[in-house]
Image 1 (cartoon, rainbow, N blue to C red):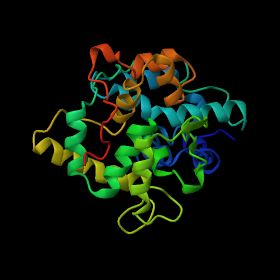
Image 2: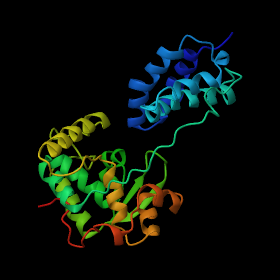
Image 3: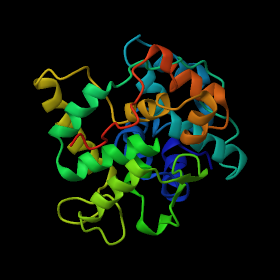
Length: 277
């Protein structure tokens, strides 16, 4: 029996999707997979030429990066179908040229950071502070549990890469964690006003509202939560320290996307207040 793209995506959704990070599951199931089903779901997987995927990807300059992300679960499903499930004989969009995303050069200044934190509610402000002081991604900050903090250290397992990180707790971070205890979370460090863990989607909604308020007051340039990771890395004394903080495999990755020479930027002061109090 010939396999359709819908059948590939059905099995992918059952066997692979649950193993991905919360944010990736949300984005794939809500946006990417429905779009892929609408475009090619009824088609026989082996009958779609790579050129068709490429023409769709490169159709117009605007939106190419987003279309690349949309294709990602389909490419993964084809890989599984070809090499693990034996459902197809071709590899779909593999091998087509993909557009390169430009490295984001925005670096949050201390003044912008202070303006953002002062507008945030307590839970969001603490999440921002933990992200800055640990250099971790939003998902890893929101999933941080109290049992990962012991003997003066934090033990992260990064959701995106699975890499294990062991970092010391600075006086600044220790002060922020004490503030987190007042939120009342019994299991998770960062919890909502109701004492429950934030979902990735729920927190993004909160941060989006905060960004709009920040922009409306003219406090600085547009920013993303992920920009805090760059700010944390650029506060490090050298590239090796930044690489270790972020959990990158190579210094090249850190240098390309995150670390900016402190000689050319506003480095964090030793007494910088992460809660802008």
